[in-house]
Image (cartoon, rainbow, N blue to C red; front, side, top):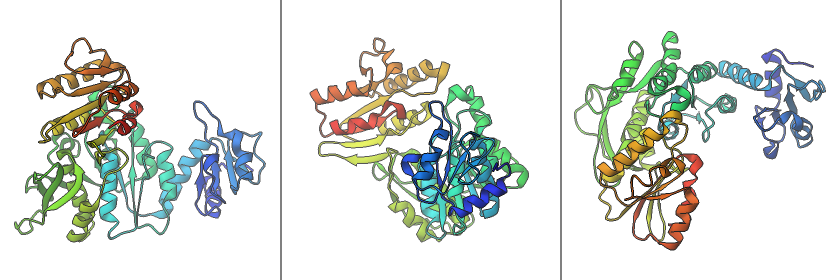
Length: 438
């Protein structure tokens, strides 16, 4: 039997208890297996194994493997997965918040989820399942028991956010910022601006609402003509606030436009870095929009602890580590360095790794980071990766290594103690492996 209509496939999905599997190493009993293809694999070869291991159905686009009963044929497995997710989203009919941006997508998603979950049953993207496969899997994980969903959407080229928006069909949108991320795929900063703002352009004709950082002139310009709910430093915004420098962790107060000018309670958080203030304020604003009580908003933000190497503070027996090694681009690295330079730590060390996906902009952007380090008089710096290594002769004041392993070996021979260490680099540099040496 061939399933060319999504309605028929959707019935099988429901019969499977809405359980999807794409990896035969992680089979969930009674689930539906989708045989996706990648650059180095073709999961069509595993459809029989999936059934044997407990999947109720397997979906293939290889005619020779379909049996018309448990192994069903579709024209294209990936497209079937995407269209199934789109159909499921329509059936659910619940509010969806779409999130994209160059930096902070996952942090914002987690903070917003923490706030909204105090009042609603909310499903949010797990980990970084935010691409053409991850977004469908996210949507298919939402059930009729959820009140709303938060869908993170990532992109490295133009047209991708428009496509993902077409699947998730968000009612609300948030672009965290527009910075220098995936410059190679987008074709420079203007390409990034065009690509990320596809979320706004999707929401415009359907009358969707966007949550916008009012202090960001680029986002405000792109959001012109849309329904806005703004947040930022300034009483003209729907939700406004200001940070209160107390320690390395962000503490802030916030209030709602038109309400009593009496300051709200101070919210002390576990978030490192002033750049996280706007993320926290954004979550407070969205919580306020959805009528979450102030006490619940503040409690959720105060108790939230970052994980997965994102602005994560970790104290070892010898040092304090600010682990921000999940990813990096020129914008996020510059912010992290600036914030770190402003902290009154007695002893500081920066461990920075190469930034990827910059294409022809790579050398220029790595030079900018080195210039920033020099301008801020940060001299205790270890730099890892081939892109930084090119500047070894030009910047003799810093320690250059070809990879993270080189830094690890150096740290074994030269122990670092009683130091606050910022670790920042692209995911592929695997700088989190240095924690054991610190």
